[in-house]
Image (cartoon, rainbow, N blue to C red; front, side, top):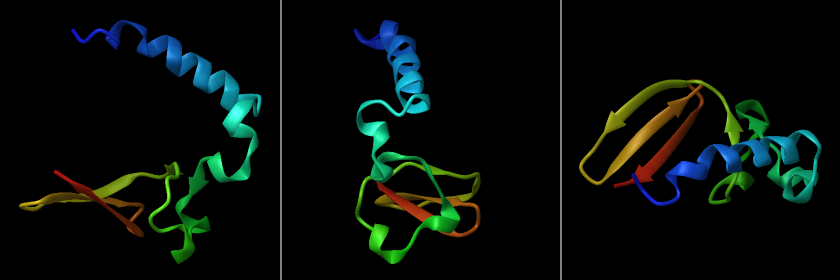
Length: 78
């Protein structure tokens, strides 16, 4: 077990409370969870959290692709 694995649930609870009460970062529009339909090209190469369902995936030599809601392709380097 990694050293910080024992406390992950505590951090998750704090994050949920902050998000529900719009405290800290969660008070800003840029940090709120967004649906796929609200994304535009301007959102490329920025950190954001999106809500959706993984509808496909593909493993390639240097990266892994996740398809979310059949509309967004997320490419993750290995």
